[in-house]
Length: 184
Image 1 (cartoon, rainbow, N blue to C red):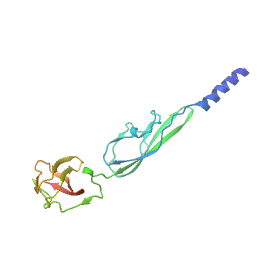
Image 2: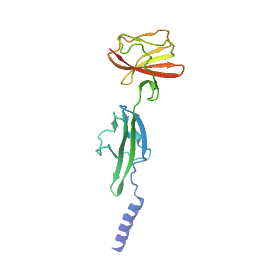
Image 3: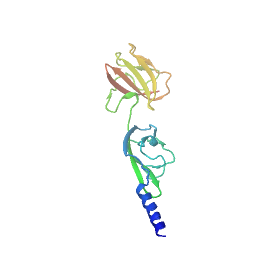
Image 4: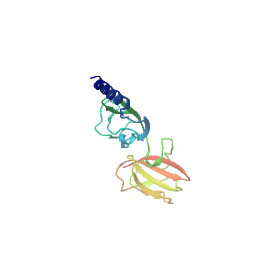
């Protein structure tokens, strides 16, 4: 009986000393553009156990790790792993959502409301300047809808574009300027 108790005590003791508890990995902070789709599972560090659960900023368990956010700000997600005999471990993922502009311009880029002579436009953009290296037109969803290389033409045909809001980006001597316009 004494031998059995010693062996049982040794097994219990060795199990708690040498138990391999799962870990959630390291905390991280990442930025995404508003409405950009991202996968929280890709944020786990290489040492994280893959059998955990994700908790959204509202405290609810997530059924999918793919998400997108539309409001700029900071959001905290948690990744929690647990195992019997081990305490829960968690990692915190801080997601910062920022306003990103299409075409590689930022909120600090130069907005020039004099690039176009007329705004809103019907079928043609009438540029105030002829001298540019590249001209791009983006939808507000962020997709490039028209691109032109340097041209001496001040009229740009936009008749095939649907009515709506667009952003004109003009590259000139390494400087990017933009102007929002409405296509009727």
